[in-house]
Image (cartoon, rainbow, N blue to C red; front, side):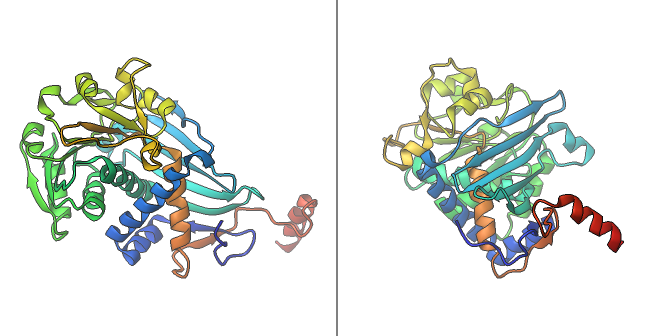
Length: 352
């Protein structure tokens, strides 16, 4: 485990939204996405080191609130995250998050940070990690179906990590597409706004679906998907929410993060319990084959998993060193005598 940030023993470094934005710009967003992709891949390669459990979810008619914990035996992490599609109508984010790292040896937290931005970055980095092993060789064009809050991060990660240079966009809300065209100006990407999902996927090597509605949806039908493409399905991430027609899955080789979670939340919730999937970490370690040939359809059915958050948190902690882009929080009681918590409280009364 890396050495702690320069801080008092009982003070916990905290990265606010403002500080996270400054850190990303200090490093450079494409550098962050590239480095984060490598960190996530390194942790996937040691998959067996981690505690693994499906996220703990509290569902309601409005959305879901989840906790995503894991540990490698030295560091423990969790993320609190919500998903509320109806928030957008109120001018609120559909997804917000914060996360924590702690030392397993003492139980003391060593980092607390916003994770709304960080989740967008790690989700894009995870997509790029999968695509560089599953996408067709020489892929240059990606279709982006769903142009909301995650979309620009996905585009830039595919550019930085996989060499994508052309993005074709479609969203049922033209304003979302206009926003994305505006935000990607000057990035070096060729950006084409399309009038339908069908036109967006024309000549695309990678198709990314990233829609927000909490419902069984059919963003892609079977006849739309030709041979040889890589599908990066990241919008279906809870029970009752999908984006692909099930016939596509019958033609594709499907790769997942953690099957017990993905079978509940991913595209494969539509399929029988024995529908075959490959855990992506097995591709990285050579225990399974990823892309076999040019005609194969590969599908990364990504719902997000706690190890990706663990990777993102440890990356931020390491990259904070020497930047000063955090503040210390006094959230851990630290009495002079560990047995005398009450005495610490009394002394505070005397000092008041």
